Length: 345
Figure 1 (cartoon, rainbow, N blue to C red):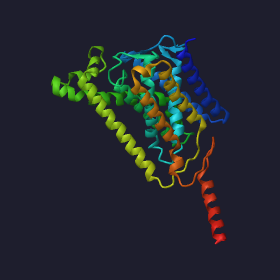
Figure 2: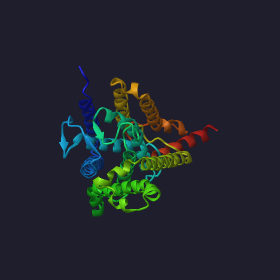
Figure 3: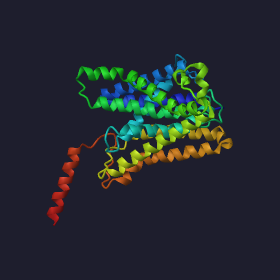
Figure 4: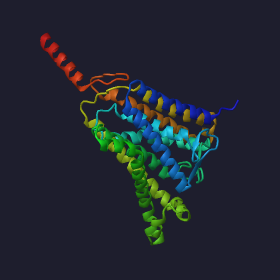
């Protein structure tokens, strides 16, 4: 019996979404419920608009539930990935303004191994050959993953700093998917403009095509070899800088405390990595492209490192499952240890 990868993927994503939603509902955490639903709305919005305007990819007809040619499970997938990444970065005691970079990087390492397999399973199809850019995945899609998760995470974390009772806060919460998409659009336009600019100057000698970037007749310019090269260069620079910022902020913190090891977040992200790694092996795709198996395994190791790094970085190892240890409790605990040590002396 042939394995139905579509059904397996839908079950994985829907189950993950319901687990996060159910836990938040059980804890009566209305904020998490709202943020998860907002991420779901954002995921659907960006997919529907992108497919309608760009025409650069399309989804398989074998997905069950769809809205305007976009599977419902894709919107849920964005919500699950974004929120799981945010739960992971919350394990690090760093500024909330830096955590969106962690979240974007967490999503990127998943997409680097996921997208190349998904297009070969025909979950979705890009209109470029499978041997171009990132093994058939446009470089702007990799940038899109970074921008999507970073922007939405930043907006949600910013809203958390505001008073929940203020009317403006409630307006921002409701408009967060739309605000995130507008910022994403300008971010993508900036990325593509920077990639096309050298080609325009060196080969065409004019700037007229920059104003018609998303028109159908000029869309092919994005896959010109020179433009592809500059997209790759910009993406590499961006990822290297993300890693530099993450490493600097983590190593600079002297008292890195792992507030909690979230089993749910770890399990969901691990399941997604393993799903596409196993699919790569079961379908024998790795035999023709063994490098994809190396990438999948390497990205999985980075995923594990991000989850377990605090265990090795912190001096005091406090691991708590599904609950936080407040700073006041930590302070009191240290005071008690100091009193005991002084009495022993």
